Image 1: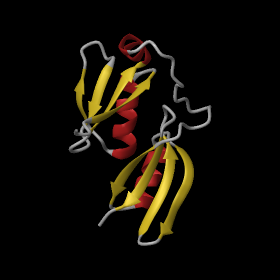
Image 2: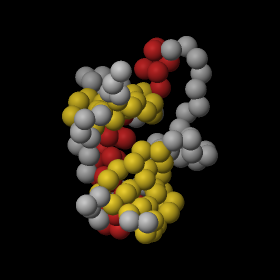
Image 3: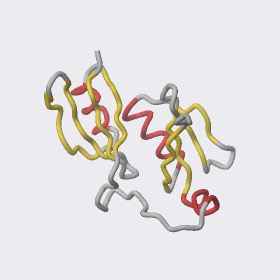
Image 4: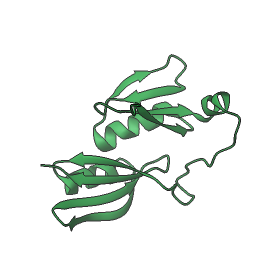
Length: 127
């Protein structure tokens, strides 16, 4: 078995792709013609976004939508960065909700923000 991608269901794929580019510098590497599905260039494992109607067409069970004004869902995306403080400031300037400013944790600096669709994002220093 191989982990291929994570898909987060959102209201507007294009808006979220633009946010992830502005906040984290991640470029879109694919967007469906109708704008209902898009992927970010994140390396080996894809990070994708699809609209709620796409989710409803895939499976009939209900799910809890990630929303910025509601409590966060129980998972995070972790992004490695060379300068956590600079990355944190850039994400907040792009519209991310600041949750935990850069802090030294053991050998790494880490910070947390919440993206515009409500996903928790950890920023971790990498050498």
